Length: 65
Image (cartoon, rainbow, N blue to C red; front, side, top):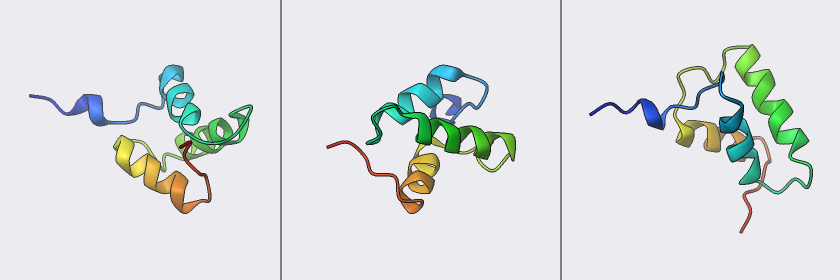
């Protein structure tokens, strides 16, 4: 069985919307911009969701409780 669904897909807007909704940021703009920058620089291409969450955590973003 493929694990492709575990990968963060930079080409899908709903991916960034979903992930940004998990983090405290009233407009979600900061998280979305961070993800867009990381996608543009290929830093998170082929990354798993867990790796993206860790990157966000490591960069000071805080998950909603």
